[in-house]
Every structure is written in C-alpha cells, then in structure tokens.
Image: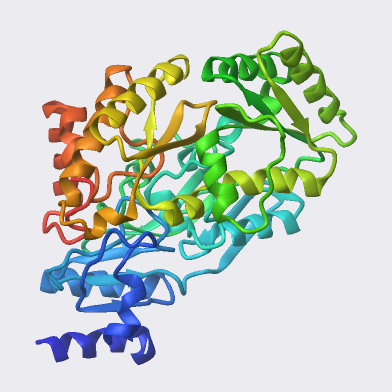
Length: 471
C-alpha cells in the first residue's frame, strides 16, 4: 500500500518532490524552536494549484491526513504532523510566483509559497507598499500568514492579514478548487467564505494563492525610542503621539529591559541605543506618503514634552536610515534572542489597551510565584494590546528529571487566566495550533465551539486536513 501511495504521489508532483528519507524530511517535521516534532509518510512539494488539488483528492480517497506547511516559522505547532507517521506533509515552498501586480488597483496576486519579503520586494519595485512586517519575513510564507491571520508591527495602521486579503484561491478537503481571486474591495454577494479560511490554520482548506492590497509607499518617516519608568508612561506617550500625528503612527512597540538585554546578549550587531536604563522602552515609527515631512521633528516635540514632565526618562530620535534600522533590529531580534536564552514559554495574549499595565503586572507576579527560577521578558504591540509575555526557564530543567510539560501548563494557565479576566484573549496573531487547543474550549464556551466544530464538519467531514490543530 505504501509503495502504491508513493508511486501515485510521484506521478502527481514528480519523483524529486516526494521526500521519504529521514534526513530529507527532518526539516519539515520539527518547528524552528524544536518544541514540536512529528512523523510523516512523506513530504510532497507541489508546483501549482492543479497538483495541490490532485494531492488532496488522492488523500480524500484514501483518507490520509494532510498537513499543509508554509515557511514553518510558527510557534504553536500548527504546521507539524503528530507522531503517528500516518500523515503527509504538503509543503507549498515551490509555489512562489507573483502572478500579477496591478498598479492602478493597488493589488498583487501571489502564490501561497511566496515569502513575505518577496511580496514586499515586488511591491517596492512598483513603488507600492505591502505593509505587513515580521521578524521572520524572509522565511514566513503568505499561505501561512493567511492561515494564522498574522499580525506584525504595522497592524496599528494597516491591520492584520485579514484586512490585507481581497481574494483567495483554495483547494477544499475533497480536492475541489475554489477560485475566489477577486480583487474587489466591495463584494456583498453572500457569505464571505474567504474569512472562514483566513485564520483557520489549514483546517478548512489549503490556500494556494491570494490577492493582496497594496498601499502608497511612504516618502517620509521618523523612528524613535523612548526610555520609560513604567507601562503607564508608555500608554501616555502613545496617546500623545496619536493625538499629534494621528494615523501617521504606523508602529508602537514596547520592550522590557529584560527583553532588550536578551537581544543585546544574543543577536550579533546590536548595540544599546540609550545610556539610560529603564524598565520599559517604546519604539515608534511614523510615516507619511508626502515627501519632505518633518516627522523626526514632530517626534522630537512629543518626546521632548514627555522628558520635561518626567513621563519619559530618555529618548532617541533616529536621524538616518541606518540609525532607524539599528533600532528596528532590536525589535526584530527578539525571537532569536529568546530562543538562545533558555527554554521559551511564549504567549500571544491581547487585552484592552488600558489594561496592559495590569495584565503585565498580574501575569508576571503569578509566574514568579510559580517559578522563582523563571526570567520574564516582554515585547508587544501597544497600539492593539497584543503583549507577548515570554517566560524563559533555565536550560538545566531539560536534564533535571522534573517533567517540563506540567510546568508549561501551569505557566500558561497563569498568564492566560489573567488575560481573560481583563477581557482579553489567549491568541492574537500566532493561532491555536497544538499548543492552545486544550485552552480554546474554556475561552470560547459551548455555543461558539459547537458552531466552529459544525463548520469543520461541513468543510472537512473526513477530518483529513491538519488534524489535531485548532479544534
């Protein structure tokens, strides 16, 4: 039976694109942090949508589980198969073509295997902007970003992936091709099926292409870092920036001193930008499509006022692109730094913006009470309340004999409970995957879970698409 399956797979995608050897499959069977590992019958790499449809039909006929995978940059195990070895991994890496770019309509049509950086570059070549920005943009793929409704640092101004997708092409669980590649901003013709697939983590269909929104390219920008005694001050400075600069505030990111120190220790080429050390820092970027705007001067004015009244302790406004890039390197180096710091227990919580200080204080205290040996670092998007409270445990725990999973569960419960108490959520941009599946029912409640399970049964009655994820 296995030989027959492999022969069929090779007939669809070619023998070079069916991987069965342990060494060949290894990169596809573990997440980049090394937390999740699985097994698979094979890894298949289709070249186009027709091959994806043929692969899904084959799996549907034989009831073979299928795990779609993009750049494999996720942190919740959403693209890793289980350990049974009964699933196929479908890697979309070869489907990386820019199909069309419309300068008049400000859209770009791309295949799911395009990296985020590739789409950004295509937009830039046309003097346009695709605004999503992530630390993993060189390897993160568009299909995965859609499947998780990714966010990033520019959500404040441009929204998450859900707001950037106009149309989708997807293969449904029976192999049917749904062509919804419509570059329309207004289409009020029934249920918005694309929004069911966005954020569904590959459980309802496999996204193969998308029409994405482009924007005018900014011609002026300003970047600054403020050192702050507390999170209340960060909220105050953010409010002043919004009141003064409005929608030109593109990004507003907070970093704890512990997080900044981790980046400086583990990411080559980073330097401490301010002599003053404070518990918190606010990194902000403002942009305008008009050239010659004195945005750095406006940042100077706002931050100067914060320094005068003691809201901020120090501030730096970038005076060159190189200086701005150095500030952003600190933010984008967070994931690498944390992975090198110890055992990472990450969180993707979001709370109402006004509740950020209460959440960080409460969750940090709860974690410290559970694990005095833990180090807590924090980074997040202050403009949308998405705070990544990251708990770093000592590497020595791996060999201590103390079971790690109960520790992780207790920490997650402490952080998630505090977020929910404050009207927040346990996942803002990373998805549910494997790691948060058990917590989802408590957050959503019976009625909402029943609706979600009903949608899954409608789309995928055999349950073959990305089983064990989300639901």
